[in-house]
Image (cartoon, rainbow, N blue to C red; front, side, top):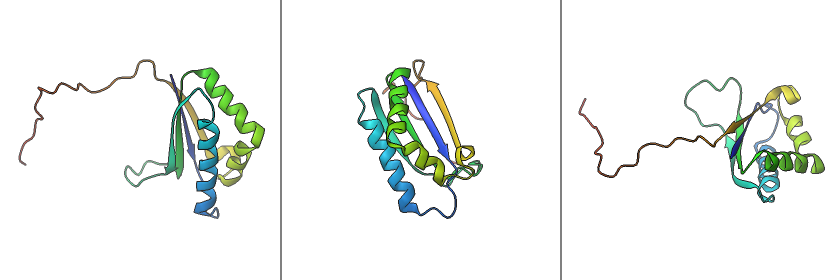
Length: 121
């Protein structure tokens, strides 16, 4: 399984509804393909303060690299990828893409007999 992670530095002049429309188009392209397992995306939430100018992002889980490649070809066919680079700061310079192999995914121990360790402070 492959997780495709994309972070975007959306330019200040781009309207929020335009960003949402493009993310929706990306979701539709991904979810129309048989090798896609999940899509999520949107505006970053406040928190860590380490966003380094990235304002939006999306994540797609694929069954394999070929499914990811099929998705990328789909973006080329309807130019959604091009429209994405048009709304980011510096074009492709405002986009960060990573692919992570999820075959060794780890999950927390779900033992129901284990009590949480809580303390008063």
